[in-house]
Amino acid sequence: MDSVGNIIMYFVAAIVIVFFSIKAVTTRKILRAATYLLFVLLGTAVLYFQLGYQFLGGVQIAVYAGGIMVLFVFAILLTHKPNENSGIIDSHRRLLGILVSAGGAVVLLLAIFFMPLLDGASLLDCLSASEPITMKEIGEAFTGSDRFQYLLPFEAISVLLLACIIGGVTVARKS
Image (cartoon, rainbow, N blue to C red; front, side, top):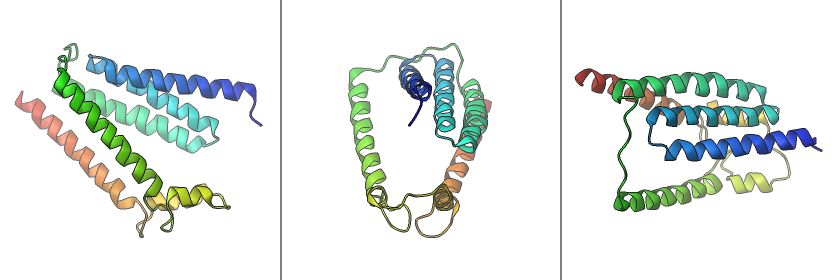
């Protein structure tokens, strides 16, 4: 059974993540949004540490909270003036954004629960199975190149991030 301190720490981390997530998407200053995102990423690392996944917590801090946030701040400073407020979104675009977000959430939930994960089994099949999934199986699924493994999409995302960096530098040079 978890101790009271762990339960309190979980709720504090969850409240911090939810609060700063909302602040990150509602603020009008882009550097503040990046700072709020940093707190969300650190709160996620706290959850990893609480679950006993010290390696994932360390990676979360080193890669995401460290490296990706530095990348975001440089991209922001290269493409925007830091003290510039963003414009107010009119109601037509706001409604369109809400509809697209709701549609994306539905598609994401369907993908999470019905997309094949390990050996062609969906998340619902894995959750109803009697034997637990080990961290080794999850690691092999993320870093493998066989069917239902995710090395290729991971590498595609890294190439996409590199293209975004190059595009940001190009836009900054033309300004």
